[in-house]
Image 1 (tube, rainbow, N blue to C red):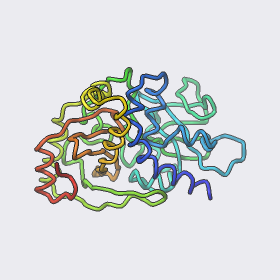
Image 2: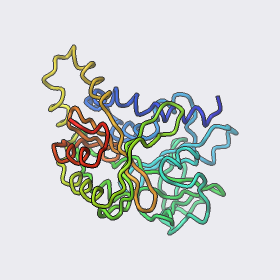
Image 3: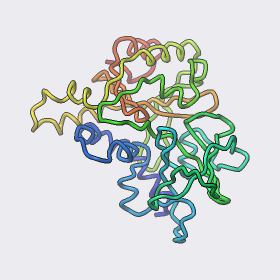
Image 4: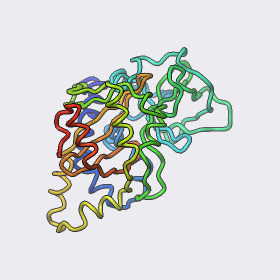
Length: 302
């Protein structure tokens, strides 16, 4: 199997693996998960690292494996890569070029073999705004003569019960109002196959209603969510409860006017939305379900 096939397969099954384990895993306070453990929601770093395909650009080992590296910048964590299928899934061109590099933001250096970090020293590695859509959702990394995308994964959280409003996630991608969203899609994916939109909403009124509903939702940190959902379940039944919750997940893909894409997970039978970018949960009610019914969004009903 080619390296890109391995990565595509890992990324495709990642949501399923994480859906079945994240509630239980996040409920355990282990050092490190708040940093790169949470970033696994983007690229399943634990799996990728274990099979030794996690190398930054500039690595001289001669590997033909696709490059993936981690970056912490401005209070957020990013994955840095140039894999075509990943770029396209985020709404980017399949190749990052010099013309896409906008305003210079910082100099970077390699750290710990699998990360980039900001440095005050001038280097041959630079971080730029993504010129076609300047925002925190995507940056451009130039490492020597190579250009890659730095893709937003999640905010840096300081404890396991920090919660972030969905409006903050929208702003990361340059969405300051409903008019900045072009399409809301329900997507389905299988291992090794690109996600397919099985239902879409592009009507301006529908998008405005969705934006208003979701930005009004109350956010819950992981500890509070765990207490609400699982504290009253007997210990011997918790594994099955986590699996049942994970199996209820549906994916909503938000596409901005500039073409960037990000996902939310909806659990219709339990009445929750989860955002990998904020690592927060949002309790939903009749407003969202009525919206889905009104605009014939199949599957989103309680």
